[in-house]
Length: 91
Image 1 (tube, rainbow, N blue to C red):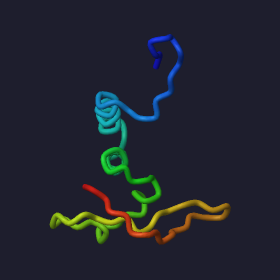
Image 2 (cartoon, rainbow, N blue to C red):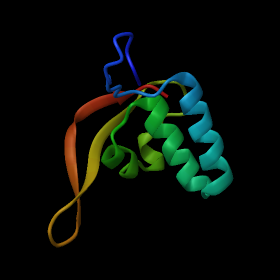
Image 3 (spheres, helix red, strand yellow):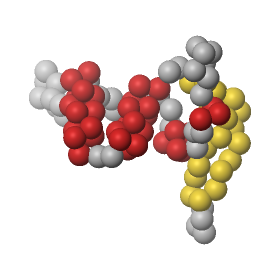
Image 4 (cartoon, rainbow, N blue to C red):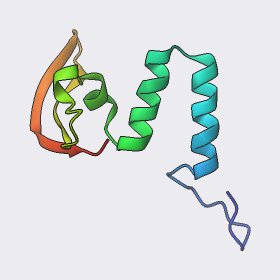
């Protein structure tokens, strides 16, 4: 992106049309699981590890906010699961 004084300005977010394009591409090119993963990451602001650690039990379909309480992360040897402080997820 270029500012008015022709200086490069970095943007650390996607515009609405860029999000829509990304989701169209993921829907066409990726599995349903991966498309849903991108959708969750974009619209919930959850971190990758938090999203990957979600289970059906973490989601309340009755309307109460779901909570993120764990996340996956990698160590030098394997994949690990860590408990987090409760953080509400707006879905």
